[in-house]
Length: 406
Image 1 (cartoon, one colour):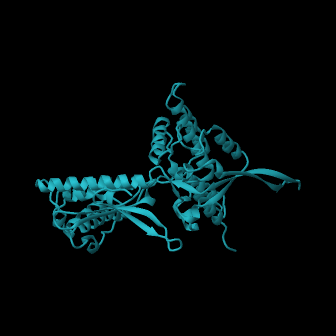
Image 2: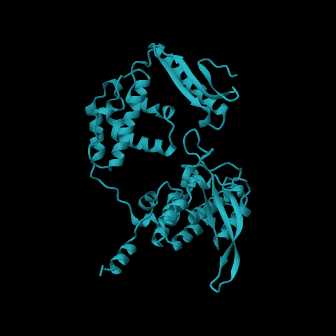
Image 3: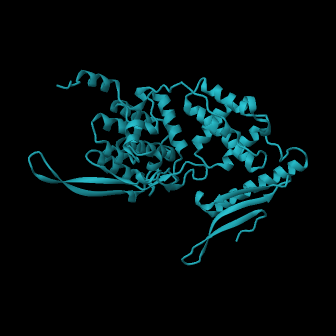
């Protein structure tokens, strides 16, 4: 049993065997204004119990320091500025790191300059609405909603700290935004020639010395991962969690054009786990995004050679781990692709592999139910509306080949 002041252990008890299991640590401490600071750290959100315990100690120590500052008159637990509350968002809400980056951009552009130094108690409905209107003038509706979400989180934290009684955001109606996102059609897919040119550029990127074996390995294994994502349409976080046991070779019978029955080798890529991207699961293995994401993707023909190359080249059980066997983070992978893209002039990012997979299947007239299964989507609308795109060539071909009802 761990003993730390203001940190409590929480257990769950199994009804069947009456066995107690440690499930969380809770920081529970009194504040100078008579209220209490309470924050739970669930063990299942961390790599292990020690990681959760360390985070609890860190937050506890931070609160103790704030109390000391309050006693010296430096800060007050009765007053929080908008900026101070914004700084507390990561410790109060467990979200993907990319989400926090988006929060920072939107907060800095539409909230911070005008309201950052203002006490949350002095914020009015008109203040919130003015920031939303400012955003709606230049941004799409989705971004306006994000700014509103930031305000909502600020008031939730303020309520937890007994600073305000009501979340004013619930009283504010979002202004309408008529702006639309301009998305280049060329960025929703990539030709095979461009992809191969990018792969060649990436294989030579860095000009590493022969002695820099770790850098060369990390570059090459990420390139292998990109190629596998290209032929399977899997998510980056799924690719980074693939282990050797997740690739199963078998044979199936197939009929040739002459009617002969031959055996064809096939490999199944079994998607079972993914690498987390939230602040508490940054490079740890977690469950797949949805139950539908658990799937077996068949790989046949010349693509089998790629799978065999990967199995031969990888030095780890976790196929796409770095030289030392550690999982790559989403930031590591995306940043590397961005640098290569700038160097060769061909824009490639991890989600492009998934979009191009769906778009190519759509262009080939693949049954939407098949695309849904391969991509691990919950419904066919997701595969068609969010990923598959109609190119200009598709539009021209359709108008030229239209058949009129007789």
